[in-house]
Image (cartoon, rainbow, N blue to C red):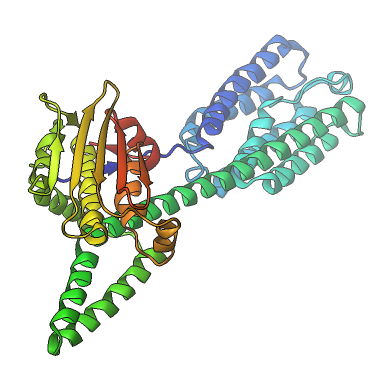
Length: 410
């Protein structure tokens, strides 16, 4: 069954657009309420009524425009600001001069700030500075002189809109940085997964061809030499980084791993014992609980593959006659699998040297797999006393996988 990934991204701007929508509706009601309480003091109330009729229709009709930045176009912003400035300039014609000089509100009142904030959210602090400057000029023309309360209101709108515009720009930059980081993480994890698969198959086959060809001599030696060159080139490519493959290729690769492990591709729990049983043989002993050791299918396959990689290292580095033991422990919260051998052990510093040379057996095929599952892989080796690899994987790997991949599998 093919797997699909659903990535959910939340825009940091969306709450601001929703808040602005509510602000415009509430300030429209507020402006109309102010006019209604002072209706008798207006010298031309019919002009104010006409303006508020247009303002109410415009506010309600343009609510969908404030759904997101894409729908809030420059034409809409220009028209919206024009309506706000027009209301300010109409105030001296509709209201009484005494009220204006006494510091009475303009016709749109604080609704004007909504137009300026729309500029700030859409285009950042520069757009906000332009819009707030135009509103400031209109307020000064309406009062006729730079009164203290007018200057105070103008500076308040100017500073607040520029600050919000700057915050929006920072939030957008942070969102882009986070998206890029997630892309890099996804590409790195895909490269590591491919490196593990390549190490478990192609690289080992090339290494075997190189050894057998060199031993046989003749034309086979030339074939072995070519295989060795390709092994080195492939190791360099894998350690240097690979581009992410398509989703179809990833699903096909996962399906191939499932079939190779001998387990049907199912969503139900998998018995780890069934995946480890094929490793048991004349020189590999398997000790396991009598009851099923259940893990998520992906976790069970990855643990089994890590055990296979550990046994491959035993065969290659400890010698063909080395013995190995696999111990499976089913704890309440985790599963512990220990792979031990009686080989000569690993010299100090050899693992770091191998990783630097692009040999990813322990770094990716073992530790990388367990790290992806939220578990751990510890390797203890004493020269002359063999090597022990302890794999620990939590039984619930769904939360760890969702957090690391930022994806919901369904």
